Image (cartoon, rainbow, N blue to C red; front, top):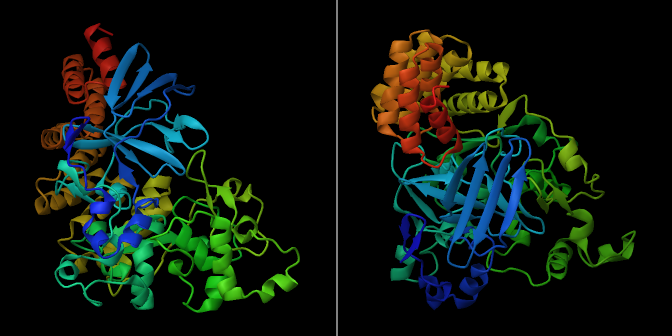
Length: 524
């Protein structure tokens, strides 16, 4: 066991001691050095450093040793200091860092980038008051941990320890191993290469197809997916309609390898034969990628290609799958999987970003789930992009299929959000209250009911629901902000002070909580 922040975490056995290593030592040893195996773990020592975020006037400093990493934040005379609990990512491109607070996981606003050093994590660059309180949900961790252990019904609360396994394990691709360990014969465990085409693709798509939004089926979580299933048995992925056009610009994103490959001439002409495993062996980290992947290209195209190639070269990837900057990850470059004959200029990867105006399913789920899941995706993406038209489209879909999912909390929450975006707080509140009846111990429902009653100008009911949200989850930040707004608008300085005291008690190192408490006590 070792102490990491405030979490007591069991260290997994060395890969050499992994149960699979007894019969598959070469595969296990090869996998141990891959990016997937190193996707999450304790923070490694990085160079100490400082970073100034000019937009917010925030100063960061980092102290790092092999045993401990501490990150400090300072702004407007307030200071917070955090021991990092986990590093997210393999480090090939970057590390993001997680802290723990009373069983909750949050992301640090500062990250470490390969070849560049310390900088703002993606999404924090334009934040005017960055801090260490971006909630890390189970869906955030799905592709970065072997198995997270969230507390059901919560937003970002985890059991102790929060992970059964840190990095991605063998079971993510091969399915449950118990039967195979008891009877290690062919057929007692899944070999993805032998699966039907759709199930085979799903093994890789679970982490390499993020799309614009992923919508679980009723009663499901992303983590319910197991190798051998089709992705749509558990959830549907929605992408921008224009991203399906092979002739479109389609800017490169961090998690879009599956989308890019599907656009390639190679994949489209192969009629399903070309898949991720054609080129990638997950048990191997090539010592010489140029030679390794060149052999993969020639296995399909043949050596005869070189004779008619306009400029023969030994680096197929360098020309046809170059490293490009991505539109949604600061300071990082990723391999372009579109395998273009004549790749577009690198600037097109970032400068030509277009926000999605229409969503389509990567593969349509069955029956009524098609309308349910697309409606939920449109509301989530539309809300994120502040697109009223997309939210309205999603709202109409959910209203049309509500009778097929009358007790579905996700549908109720989606319809409530649609009413809320349309400034119909009273109807939104009624629907959120129905969702609360289905899930009475979920703080998020009470938060949205509070927002709805505030929109309906019933501050008394709003406060009641917001207080219930705080009682259920004191480390959910938004209810404090809404309560502070309500009390400030009412001129109730005493309740403003008391709310800041509770906010500060829940988040003792948070800069805004410190400043607010200081100013209210000073009579400002």
